[in-house]
Amino acid sequence: TQEERRNETRQALLGAAMELFAQMGFHGTSIDKISEKAGYSKGAFYAHFDSKENLFLIILQQQMEGYVNDIESILVQQASIEDFVIAMNQYYEKRKTLEQSSCLLNIEFLLYAMRDPSVKEKWSNLIQASVDQIASGIKKLLGDVYPSKELTPEELAWAILSLENGISIYSFIRQDQIPSKLYEKTLKDLLIC
Image (tube, rainbow, N blue to C red; front, side, top):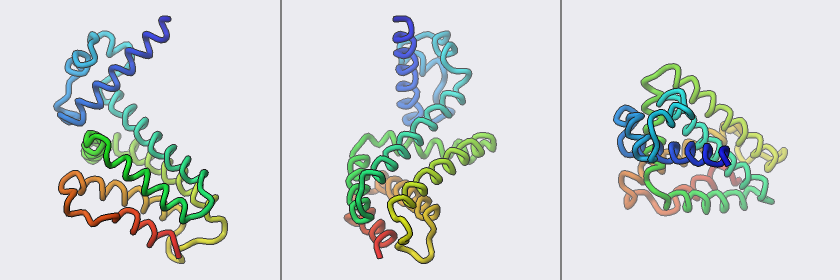
């Protein structure tokens, strides 16, 4: 159907853009390059997206929502905080073995947001929504028993996001220098009394 073809075109453009943004950065990627890589015309691009920035922000939102939904799914499936730590470590290890383009794309999002105040605000809002969603899941899992007297569920959510992003960036640069099981050990220290 026409709707299926439209969705196929949109997905091809999104996939091509993700790959190119990771390889060449936001500024090094043009609408022409995205369209060409996806196998569509520039007109097809504009039929789906207002601008390169619009496309970039859609990808950012999809990435953030997918990641947070994965964490939320992990949270609701666990019977204990110990189970959550094990499941999160498995999830992290699985994500770590994916293409490095994911890490590059995240860094590109960060750099772009740091340079553009309007994008910074949009990304900040996405991150805060993500933190709120993860914190809510942590509250449900923990009930009234918090492993840390110092960290609130919201602060734990910030720590989880920051930990994974930080380790991922340094692993991309020099994986052999990252201590074995650092993610799991740190989560245990944060979450288990």
